[in-house]
Image (cartoon, rainbow, N blue to C red):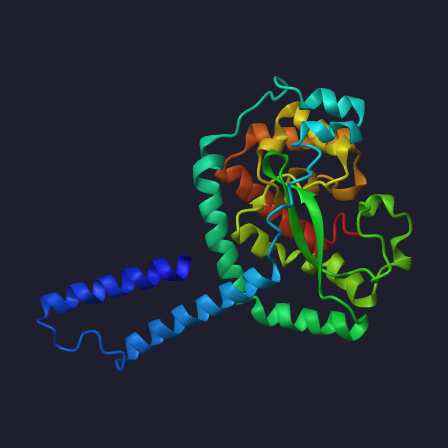
Length: 285
């Protein structure tokens, strides 16, 4: 869609110039600038197609979503079922969240993907060399309005590790961690594939970290404050203030604080504090 839009806009301008200049070879793709622009458009199209195939979600992911299907509420705890009833959300998202944030996030995430392609390839090669198996690890998470999506990471654990258990509940993670995995988790390089999740609108750069689909306690705590109305983020206020070292209720309170304070400038504060945390290794596991 993005490539088709820019391509049509480009050739629309060329046609306008053709009319203005009396048709003097303006559309000829032998010119250096035309060839360069055409090459970039083709490259962008191919990259988007490859990423769409690699990171595609099944269309029926929400078909049996226990948070959205009342006939499946029986599988949830009683306190979670009561929270799902109407009238519990206390806050609504701000103008910035609804109309500005997504566009900014998608632009910068796509630029990030293009700039970091060499790092993506290098990391993938090291992962395969250390522990043969899938390079990308995907996991079902709870997104905006409790809709499910697949979150993507570079695989940092052995293929024998449980995949539906939060990291803070896995006990001694060293028995599951690969050598490369330890490094990419400590430096947060394992999170880079989520740039694609941001580009396709499933996540944002800043927001509450998406809960596992089976973390009903965390989803319920967030729903009490209306936090599930937010698009989940690559990093967030709770991540900066403790990551996996804080409990469910405290994490939900920090997410609620972010909801109340959400703005462009607060997001920038979270972004730079995250960079600081990554540099000093704060909260990494």
